[in-house]
Image (cartoon, rainbow, N blue to C red; front, side):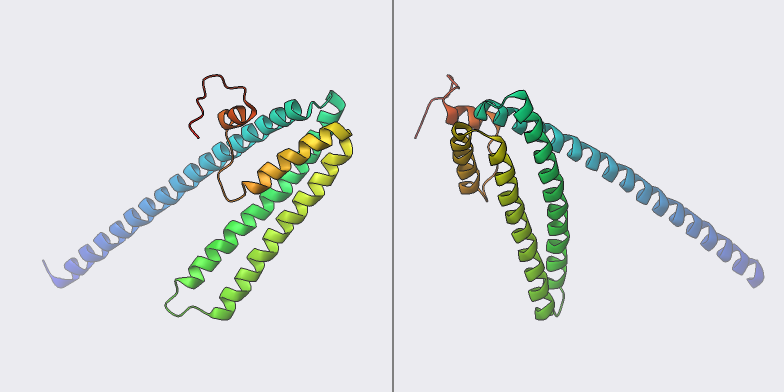
Length: 183
């Protein structure tokens, strides 16, 4: 084989390998996007189910009538949507923070700025909680307001811990006859 044929063969092999690599990369990206979309759909469904379960729980606890419950659900949806958007922004800021923190030479002023932005987002969450509480309080009678106050106090005291599942709520309410108190 002469050098010209060797060069052509090498160029053909390189082009073929390049096409194979591009195809493999495109397949990986496409598959990851599909998996991410499925994950997002599953997460969104899970959030909706948890959200609906919380509504039922609060309807029972507060003894809301149907009109109150409809208003309650609507204010809850608005609040949930706003808080979800803030939570997504918080996730982005946390990633930015970690990225900057793990750089070879992190910029402290950038870290301070990101920390401030994270604090501002937390502040927005708290403001939303206050607004949501007052919206809910308006639709409740005085007896329901007392129950709601206790529930909110429990939720606020448990911040930073994982949320209670239905069995834990039942135990706390004393309705689970199978629960043996070990405290």
